[in-house]
Length: 118
Image (cartoon, rainbow, N blue to C red; front, side, top):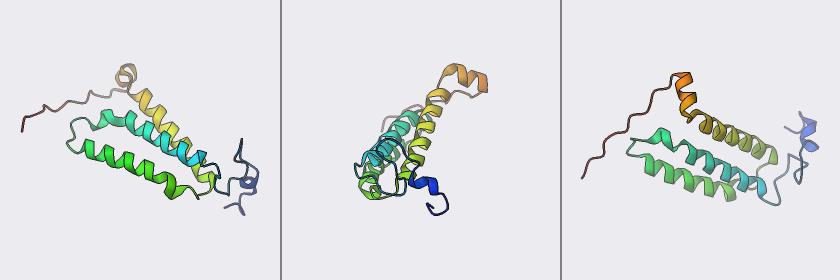
């Protein structure tokens, strides 16, 4: 994509000036993983009442940690996209959880399923 968008070669910031190369400090892969974990933890309210929520959350956390070594050679531009998307999801989750926002948007309360003893 750098051939079609030449600014990728010079459009970075801080330590990542060339967005077409991997991050040699591995800061962007780790930051991507951390922002994904934060946004997943923030979204736990939507999983209330789901019996598989614990398993889904654990798998999500494991995959986010495994993503660091699996994606560390990806171009920095991809991490810029992922971090931006994760931060947007995190902010969206924080805003949508506010009772005033829910009331304004007409979002009903999520009913909590009663727990039954085995």
